[in-house]
Image (tube, helix red, strand yellow):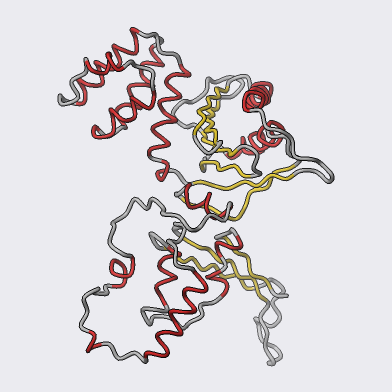
Length: 339
């Protein structure tokens, strides 16, 4: 086994928490059950890693094997990445083609390898007709950097792909071209939608809201956690009008539904407007450039936080459509300009 592959596998295993190591190694399916049984996972992690590297050397692990382990680790810890959503479209009059996964992989890989001399591409198919793609980028003169890859999750026979945010923005057009051609679409655009939670992004673009989302946070209800409300609060200290309370509850339910909300961490609004005044001679009135303002709402679970505002008495119901339209508009970046 090549030294660079051994180092790559070592670094990946060191990232994996000990309580997840067995599960991830079994999902990797490179080492046999008998080989894993020879490893004492209760000893120090350094010793465990050395034993696992020795087993990988015996089986002559390849770079692609190491890349697959990294993909599986990333699938388990996908919330450590920030994901952008891309939407593809067919040309006018184009029909939907039958999808062939093997053909897609070959086409995607060839496009990148023709454009770049040094690039490694690895795939892992998952349930729900999704394929995880890992791209390690190099240049014409440098080998691919295995420690700064780009990840793409593409759902076959859909126009959507999810890409991990990367500092290597110069490769984004090439990646978009490879996705578009390999999936037999005509063009691709980046949506104004971003989050750490792939399940929530998927639910928003596919309109699958009525499901339970993995939050990676406390199981305490958000109302209690962020607003300090006590579920056992004495009803005698609550002085809300019953009719008003029922109205707020009804509007909230009509707006957000009864199901858990997809998890987004923020919504950003950029405002551009001309200064308007009846006073002549004002410095701002003579300004040709519009006034610009950026407002950002942040929360570990923004949509659930917004859902809780009116029932908690913090905001009036209904909330502004600019806040409640996020799932339906499928965006959490907004630009607001004068009409």
